[in-house]
Length: 357
Image 1 (cartoon, rainbow, N blue to C red):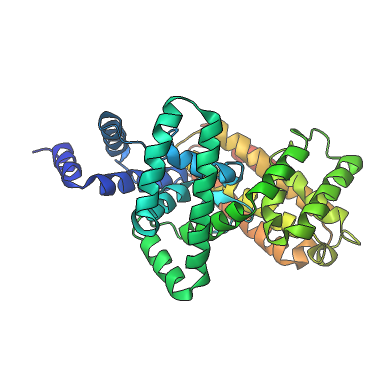
Image 2: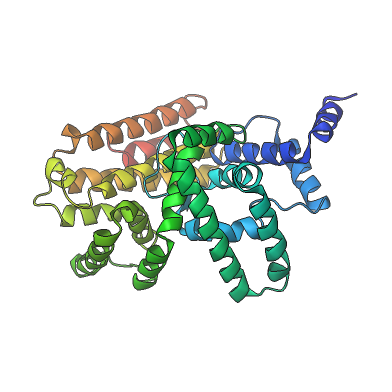
């Protein structure tokens, strides 16, 4: 028996739920650039099996997708090792859904899925929205009860760990609870914001700040999610920093840190670190075009932060930025050292220009 045969036999012996969890975890690792060598065939086998068996994967249009619809604008593909303020990792959705389905509210989920499937097949969007909203409200009540109890919260964290190795799943569950609680307010803000912010000048910043001020007054805990909705409309993710600077008495880091929208700086650093993770994955798989694009975006963000924020190096933000850039430069130097100087495999000289040390 070959190794492939042994792997196939092992997969066939796993129960369906375990195979689904394995697929989710392998895809999460792949998205983070930490894929396990030799798993491509396993992924294809698992995906094919789900299709043949009529099972729905969490990425496909299914009842779980409609349940998570309020968080779709807040999803990000990133590494679970650091927090993403105002964002939820896409890889956390599947284990959270499995926990809700198998541990939190199994009967309610079964009823919801049974009710939703014919509506989805008929593309009855009005009833789909009504049923999913009602289900969200019921799940929200249960989630709030769980998180209110330290013992129940500990059990939830432990159970989630059986569905994923990601350290972010529980924190994303907490964020999901908050988003469900504030979903109507976030939807209204999203409708009030322009679809695209081409020029983030003083006039536009003042308009956006007025909307955020009104939102922040009534929904202070949900501010990071509101800022994410703004960031999605910007031409460059690092432009979000202008909101923090706009509301500060000066451009010095200490004054900006005390401003109402100071968290915008941390959120930009979150995105920069996620792009660093994506850059590492592109290097690992020799996707030179993607690596070049990400490197330019990272370099532009670093330049903007250093120009716009005074005394940045004296702040925690500056330490964090320097650490992120140093890791990227180390990756570039390690990659370049493996090839002859004239090989052209990776633009090492370009990197030294883009990231001004």
